[in-house]
Amino acid sequence: MLSPRMPSSPGPIKGLLLCLVALTLGAGSSPPIPTPESDFLIQTERQEIILPEPTTLNISNPLGDIRARRAKDNQLIVISIIQRFQKHQDDAKTTIQIEKNRGEIKTSYPSALAGSTKSGIKGRIDLTLLVPDGTDLNLQTQSGLIEIKGVKGKLKAESKSGRIRISTAHAVEAHSGSGMVGVTLKAPSQEEPALMSTKTGNIRADFPEKPLPSLLAMTSGTIDSKGLNHGTTAPKEDAEVHRIQIGTKPFIVQTRSEEGDIVLRAQTPGSLR
Image (cartoon, rainbow, N blue to C red; front, side, top):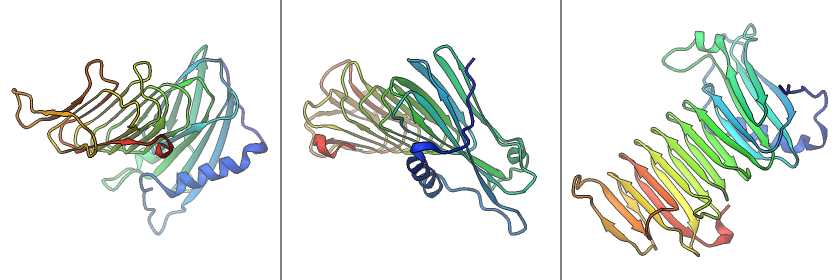
């Protein structure tokens, strides 16, 4: 088993890490509001580990957001940003386990969960990762944001109610219950397909206008497909479900929602970021 190390100095990527930490603190789902009598603290921890190639990482964080960016080498870096409401809350933990070509990253924070109320938990952990090329990611949150950009590997993101934002040139699956799903597809193909789904959350998919990928969109909400030529049908078994289809099976881009609205946009390559 490979064990992460805790570096004593930030090294040459210090500027990038500080930028990512700032983004984590400034965006995403709102942090819980501490009470006036609490001792609110923010603590940052960093772990580094060399990954075997290729590796699939399963990352679960029910305590906050997950952000992932591309690393410059084969070193995985995990930044944990911990919010503490009381000084005695010293049990926040991010564990990394790597076995051969598979790995798991999990967060735990017993004191934060023990003090939870209807207004939220009494503490938080947000994760920021720098991910080596060739690493596939499976990410899960409860209400936290999932944001992925530039990672060169297959992606799967799931959240109960959190938003999902992804920009990729690789295969992707993104599923949220009530959160919005937004995916930018730089090079969709039969080898790199995309599947997006929600229950009540809205979906937006951006993809190249040339060549236009085959796609299917289905929802009981609205479908905004401005600028696309397609066929529109309502299945006989449920006239309330709207359906848009371009091309034939197997569809490269699929967007499905029970109640959410769907936006489809074909973009010039330079605008897909």
